[in-house]
Image (cartoon, rainbow, N blue to C red; front, side, top):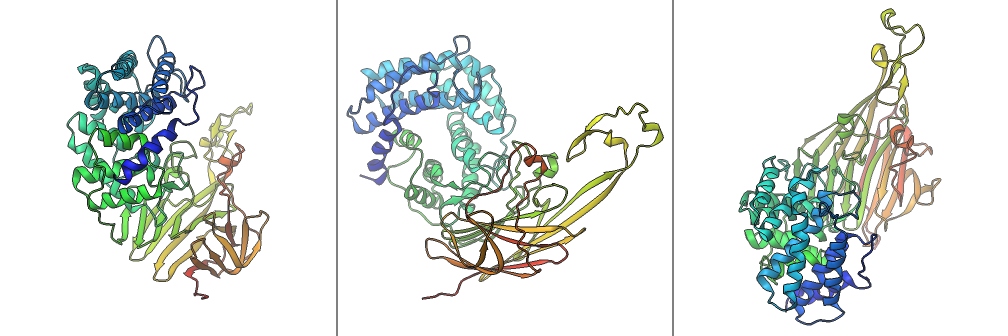
Length: 554
């Protein structure tokens, strides 16, 4: 028996272990769907009824039917009210189960399960056909649900609506990432949805999109099995994302395309653990993946790859990875908000379990941390540039004077006031910042230079949680903050040890992180926690920083 066949029953059982399925307004409908699918696939794989699997299936389906709005069939409990996309996540699983049972299950109790599934799906299908969305990935989740509902119910209007969504064009970029640039939404939403649409609607071009995306995710996966999220425009930006949720996608694609690199990544995901057992079981039972992976070829060391649309430059060298990025979304939109990439980490360097993320703060009118508005790479060096400005406003021209002092309330980019800013001349104070990140055989060379007024600067190096500073730094005002006054040695749990050596600018002890007025005014902060090394100086002198592997002490 293969590893997949051995581990899946236990993984499926853990989906429902400890859960009491009751009709409860607080019970998430997606949780009920996962329990229904997990228990069903467990029965199909093991051919035995244990741990009350049958009773849980029926109880979960009853609860799901109770949670449907009587008028629309949409589920009432969830993050969004009467949401076609939120409902689609659950219906995709239920319709997938009905199609699997149609092909792989016999009669008996399965007839009752299929009848209940079709009743739930039939009640909501008209609302899904008419419903709308509010994020890019929702289009494909909803379209996949419509295609599966069409396959279950045979209503051609559902297929036509799915095709109408697809006619918008899939938001895949030339570099292989979707417009939200999020590994989380690629793994859980866009890739599975486009795979289902490609299969059901005979659209091989959609399967090609998924294949291309998976190769880009491979490029962005470091030696510790974490996918880079610095470029994401969604909630996962800047948070480590494990590759494991991509396992089913890699397995299906490896089998379909005979892709040895996807097979290798599937094996890496399986070794990491934490993949979607329900999705894996569905693909295995319906025959989309074999129990054993096809021949695998690990990804080769690549050197530099430019993901131009996402403003990333990625260097791979075995288990060592460097990602340098621009972050122009905030400048383009004019604010920090949901749906834009506002993560200020401009580079991330990893070697095994050692990881360093670079953020740059400056004390300049509360405009927040450095976010480059462009990226250029020449050979081993990547250059990032940003220009920011704040204004002092002049009196309005005589024609614009309000004698009663009543001026329009306007937002000028940093703040709002009743001053009719658009009718005044502004005296701008500008700060131009240039950062270079150069890959060297023994590590990195980072430089920071500015053109403008003299302001305090602070480069913050965020370390992996299991890294520790061992020499050459003073403790800052927080327990996990160290302030560099010279070379600093860091070490990771796997024995990786590197030296951070600040050169050039005279260092100060005034370490700080400035999230910016737009974030701070609302009572928030995007400051990172955990171990950090701060390098503080004044902008009238450029900073040079070397990061090199520490000499062996053994």
